[in-house]
Amino acid sequence: MTTNTTPTRYDGLLAAMPASVAGGAVAGWLLAIPLAVGVGLGSVLAALFVLVSLFVVPPQ
Image 1: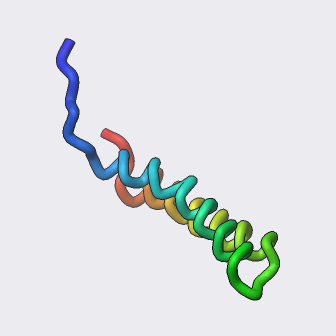
Image 2: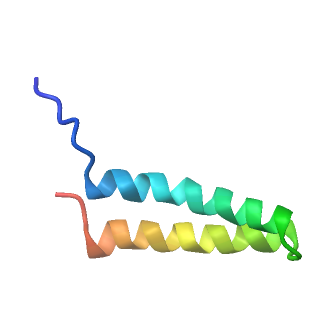
């Protein structure tokens, strides 16, 4: 069995999904917007990453 240690585009997409939600939460906590709005915007961004990973660059 061989292991590939080179990060792929999918690894970046998987990392970006929770990072966008966390970034929205931090923005909501630090800025003058409600926390729920920050998390919601981060979740919308994460949903866009899911759509990109499923339909624009689908797994091979």
